[in-house]
Length: 235
Image 1 (cartoon, rainbow, N blue to C red):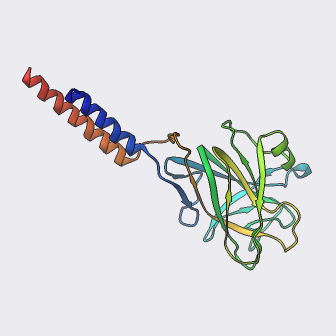
Image 2: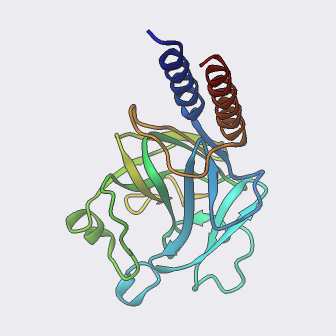
Image 3: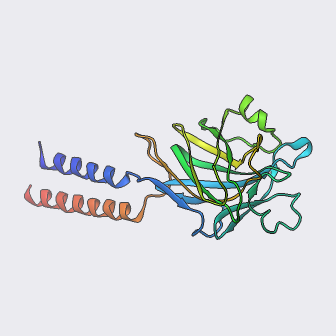
């Protein structure tokens, strides 16, 4: 094998290794509230909703960041003090829609109640790549027409953090809220504290390369230039 071919092959391996993304982890208690959050090359966009639209369909709500994580104020919660600024199912149903810039495998969320409340959850997950607007949709329409799969998890006891996993491969969005029906152990209130996930094998996350990757690329290109100058001086 020629030295030039060997050099280029080695550079390719190095750059491929630098582009490999690690596990996704976002702590919603330490980030300032912004329109997006990023980890491992995946951008996560949270949006608040509640079933406060005409006829009980989903309508925009207000997303807030608090010491325990993300909460929601809907249009029927006039003052939105404690505990109403949590994600809850008291009178209306609050949700946070998490939209991912690329596919994500099985996502674990941790929710934490501000008070002695239950933390039963309902979620709707979607694996289709197309982005859709769920405003004005009913919950039943999410599963019957918009490609969402419904799931949920109950937490025994009250007042404790609750970690659960939205299973699936290639998930592109998750609508997460308190339990939508069948409450037998009290109302559910919580903040969304964190999320963890992984990128499917063979998928390269989108986004701007990290500084370390750019530095490695620059160094590799400089080395290639010096190598070519050395070759020219010998010819």
